[in-house]
Amino acid sequence: MQMSEPKPKSHRPGPEYALRLDAGDELSQFREEFVVPEPDLIYLDGNSLGRLPRRTAEHLETAVSDGWGRDLIRGWNAGWYDAPSRIGDRIGRLIGAGNGQVVVSDSTSVNLFKLVMAALSLHPGRERIVSDVLNFPSDLYVLQGCIHLLGKRHRLYLAPSDDGITVDLPALLRAIDEHTALVTLSHVTFKSGFLHDAAAVTARAREVGAPVLWDLSHSVGVVPIELDGWGADMAVGCCYKYLNGGPGAPAFLYVRREWQERTRSPIWGWFGQRAPFGFDLDYEPADGIGRFLAGTPPVLSMVPLEPALDLILEAGIERIRQKSVSLTSYLVYLVDTVLAPLGFTLGTPRDAACRGSHVSIRHSEGYRINRALIEEMQVLPDFREPDNIRLGLAPLYTSFSDVWEAVNRVRCVMTEGRYRRYRQERRPVT
Ligand SMILES: Cc1ncc(COP(=O)(O)O)c(C=O)c1O
Image (cartoon, rainbow, N blue to C red; front, side, top):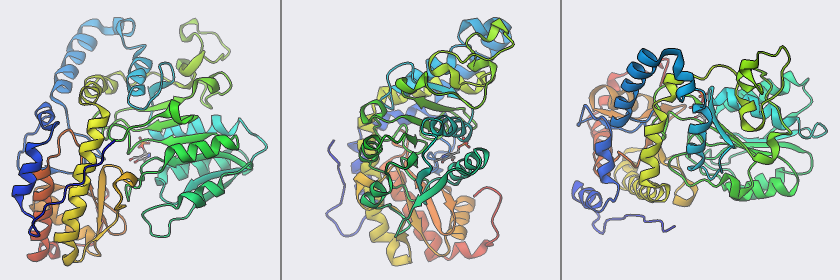
């Protein structure tokens, strides 16, 4: 894939250059597909909660009125029952997984728990779990919980990060050896947006027979993923970020076909039973990926996923990645030229091949700057401790002009000292 990194010739970056980039944007028409009720609002949090697609709003209305309202219980035999695997297969097309290896269910944290427990059963004699310090805290909590549940037989090794942004690949590969029971990492890290070399990590783990479990939450829908091709064993991911599945959308999980019959979920619920409506008193796991389901799927929360996934499949993941690289490269350029003189540093890798679709900018006043952007500048990023303002660029609806204007508004917050009006005390959700 060609990585286009826009850099204007002029040393005075301005909105005209952003407009030129927008004019050449092959995906620009996809913005029309989203509900944008406040045109002046620059939404840079699609990496946390994606925007609402127009077709989803209609689809959901029909699902409520015709599905729940009219079909009632008949809905289960008219598409609800097989929705977890039907939608799972569609997500599979975005993550390089052949049919029958992905289901939609529960939250990412719960799916991670199920798969960590399943993976650790594969090599009972091995004790080391390898992850890194940039992983999402919930993932690390789940690992700690699993270690606790399994009688503290395992040790969690967290590969360090010298700069707080990246993890050294050779050092990570050296940490994976014949004692490794599991390697589990976020493909794109939540704070710095660092993109792991998943093919290299997976290859090393396979060499020593260690299962690999990827958390794809920050890469699915914006970065090409080849789970089958890499030889990955398991994966989980969120559907409410770049997949635009809506707040609280259920997550997905992937288990490579060859492991499905050899592993079990630790939660033996009826939806993972071979014949839930046989009501047998003893548990027999379902054949295949269905055994990783637990209880009744959240039907109405799954409904928005189908139209939202169609949008991504229509745009094509390669084109989405290409625009994402162009957007983040343009933003990095603006950070260097406009924001660095105002005390900001880049909290994300400079090399486009090593980052996902969000860019973190760091400033000692980051929290108050973020508050000012939200409260009075019509810019919606988010904040991650201790000093990161995360700017999520969603290629289907973020334009180059949005990026320019957001940076311009950050500049106003600084030059006009607007952030000083806000307190340092954190709100519950940042
Ligand atoms: C990388 C990553 N993993 C896991 C989670 C947790 O997801 P959930 O709340 O669905 O369990 C998040 C949430 O933002 C995340 O960013």
